[in-house]
Image (cartoon, rainbow, N blue to C red):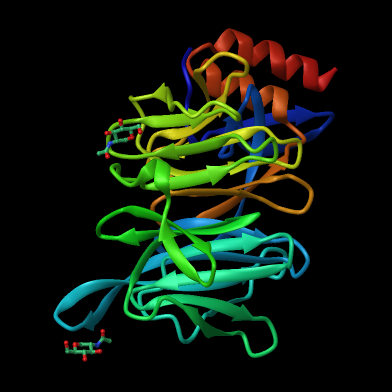
Length: 304
Ligand SMILES: *[C@@H]1O[C@H](CO)[C@@H](O)[C@H](O)[C@H]1NC(C)=O
Ligand SMILES: *[C@@H]1O[C@H](CO)[C@@H](O)[C@H](O)[C@H]1NC(C)=O
């Protein structure tokens, strides 16, 4: 299957006496063409996209180059952008802010950086210290339990009896991304592969050892998505395999807005996918860029 990414392609459509220029600069996602709405650009590697649906705030971390922090030229910062208004502000008070998790049970956003875990304060738009002072936080996840992945050991810890303890099943392995689905299946990835642990079993089943996972998320229907360096994949249930649904050069993060619309990032920007008026035409064009005959057919369909 050939996937063509965001090619700038101008077509002139003649509708009645009016000539209209259209641009197919969106992407194909799961066999449907979508327009791409820019949410924010000029960022460095926007990682860990997490949408807070009630406030409309999109949380993400990104590298800030140019700022020299103790001799290092790049550091991480957490920023929020309103998904509709496109207004952004940096979250103060989280040095090296990188990890982000939403606690749906309590409607809280947790943030992690070089020096522990913080809770976002929606009134002051800053972060209040929460736990694990002096520890560097690589990943955070909250569902029933509160988990974090410590950097640089990549060890998974869980909150139990007033402290964060190593997760027994994962003491001897590294974990880079950790996720528990609505059905309580566990997904995780490390340098070796992407795995799934189905309840009540304990063994980790390999889903893929070919992709570089950057984020694991699910939509409101409970389908699991994997954002990888070369695009977006979904789990092909009930088989233990994944299927590519979008080709993206250097994808970094993925989340969904309140209408389950896809929000994703590449190396510099965050986009939201929108339904397109010319989805069929652009789908044909992107799938068969040199098939001018199909193009002419589509044009005549649009004119008539
Ligand atoms: C820079 O390093 C010093 C000494 O190691 C440390 O006290 C300080 O907190 C560091 N600053 C930042 C912003 O990380
Ligand atoms: C990744 O996890 C698998 C499954 O638990 C384990 O076999 C493998 O050793 C882990 N890789 C690393 C680098 O820890």
